[in-house]
Length: 164
Image 1 (cartoon, rainbow, N blue to C red):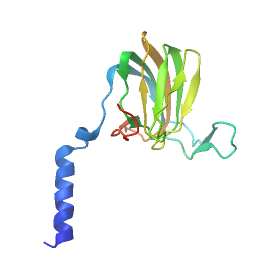
Image 2 (image 1 turned 180 degrees about the vertical axis):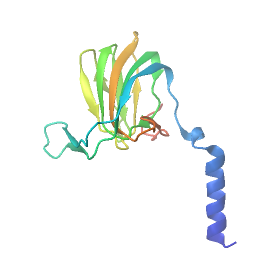
Image 3 (image 1 turned 45 degrees about the horizontal axis):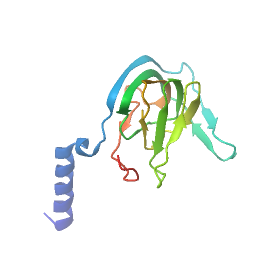
């Protein structure tokens, strides 16, 4: 076996043994349930324009499944670092969410309070939500463009920009 092939086999064996679990950052203090999951009856293309910049557009061609979920995060709880296959519309029902993105080197939270909503771009955007307040955080999330039969949450390792 040549050196490159031996190295590739060794890396693959280690990755298979670890299964990615060792690097994921699991959530804590969370309860969640799926309210509904459905596929569009006809082909749907959607665009989300986020912010004032006309180029900040999330485009989803031929959207797949849509999933709705209610999530409760206890005080001190966290979602763990993760991403989603497509855009997610999040509505805050109660409590306060501290939302951290992997792209922010200063690890500054965006804070969302009851009655506010936001769009997570999904499509590989790694982030974490934390309940840093004294009350339960309850939110509703609608996930778009989820591949049929596949998860709408993709665990990710800590990007290293935050101390948690």
